[in-house]
Length: 322
Image (cartoon, rainbow, N blue to C red):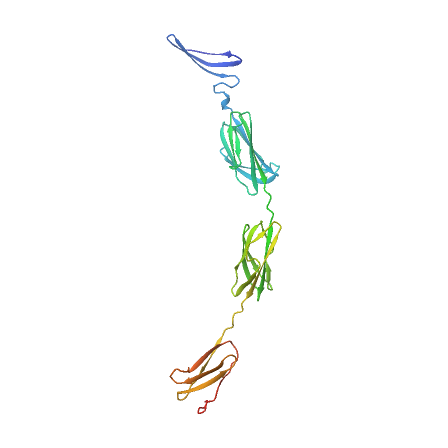
């Protein structure tokens, strides 16, 4: 075995010959070269395939805003946050990953209420343009090549708040005061409560986004009845519009507690003689006797409201009221 080391030149490239192993087997000589080009393009351990790259993620909001955006990735660290408020404190709008091996990497932005992701633009320096962004998935796919720098910018636009309208519920209570509950159904649902004073109450303006709504009175205290509503059907609320719903309730006066008066006829001895009676304040006239045949009752009961009453018996010949 013969081992030599040296250098030679092939065309315009300088070749460094690290090891030449010459194996002699009879008349056949086999040469196994292990070499690398001086500019790093050869097949040795110092070739360009081992060069590291850089990935830069940029957050761009329109307009600039302090809202934080969270990202997840198969890089390290696996998650990070950026914002685009024009300062680097407490967060920057850029995250740089250095000394990254060639390979495929993914960076995904979490959705943020009030912002719409409009584009993901990846620019590649020093490599093939084969990285891309998917807005629907909110994900950038980065195919990093040796020595390459890839810059991916996530651009979001702030969504202006929708124009709003208002709903006002007014309560008219006849006969007293109480607390009444309401439900607003529609694009901006809510529950409302009104406590009346001197027979009146209101929710004040309830802010809603434009849409179709309905208002129902869901809590009516005992002894109250709903007698009128101006919002018995669904209605539309436009931006800048105020819709007023008026509910009128009346308090039912419970009847007073009632008593009873019982008139009993007692004849001595028992007899079939009929006796007529006349009463005041709605008692009227009636007849009793004191026998056992059941044709007429022996007594009669009247259920009456509190008050003063009188009952008189009509005299009967042959009988003395004792």
